[in-house]
Each structure stands twice: as structure tokens, then as C-alpha cells.
Image (cartoon, rainbow, N blue to C red; front, side, top):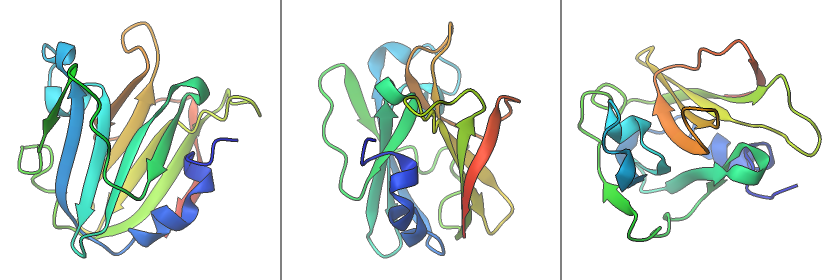
Amino acid sequence: MNKNILSCNQKSLKKIIGKKIIKVERQIFKDDDDLDDYEQNADGYIQFTFDDNFIIYFFPLTELESIGVKEIEMPKLGDSYQWINPSCNEFWSNKTNVVITAIDVIISRFRTCSQPMEHALTFHLKNSQQFSIEFMSDDNCLDTLRVVGKITTEESIVLMNIF
């Protein structure tokens, strides 16, 4: 099992409960710039800085169709990606500086032991807002890590709740 997969990092996820995201940074694939809501839907890593300066970033684990997490600053990905700070855009404006109350780790109903498919993470906020980081791989989105308001697929179930 990959040590960066979400289910192996419950302690890291637990650390951010009760904290506020004060800064959102992404490295997004430049060729995705034609997508609607490019700053959320483009493929790439996402990093959060919290009110106590704790940093965590999320990245795709393509071979496992899952999301990975590390408690360090995200590395620079290369010339095909651009580093952005969407913290104040319309999507993030009511999600930053709000306490995280819970996190759900979401898996596919079609997972196997060799393919854990921990493909999404939903953050619940004190102001009743939520957002998800989602790994997608289908005909429209090949191996993409994106940010969405809510996971809506019927093929997903909650693996664990972190409070």
C-alpha cells in the first residue's frame, strides 16, 4: 500500500480539523486553461496553508486511482504547470477563513485490494459550506485532480469520517 494514500494518513487529516484555510495554492496544467472554472477544474496539485501556518498538499496517485497527502509544501511540477493562488476567487471566498468541522474520505464502490480508489475527500465547514478534492479518470478527464463543490456520483461511498 502506498504510504501517502488518504486512509494511511488519518493523523494528518485529523490535524486540520478545527483549523481555517487561509491560503489555497494550486499547480495546474496549463493546457487545461479552456475549462470552465479553470482554477478548480484544471488538473494539478492543491496546497492549503492554515491559520497556524501548518501546510498540507494533495496530489494524484494515478496508479491507485486515489489521492495522496503530505504535510510539506508541494514541489514544483515543471514548465507544463502554473502556480496560482485562487484563495480569493468566487469559489473559495466563502471557504477560506472558515473552520473545518469534518472530512470524509470517499471511495468507489468498485474498489479492490490492489485498486483502493480513495478518489475523493470532502471538507465540511462551520458555515455549512463544503468542497471536495476529487481524482477523476474517465473519457472526459484523464487522471485529473480537481476541486468541486460536492461529489455527486452514485458509485461513491464514504470510507471514513474524520471529526
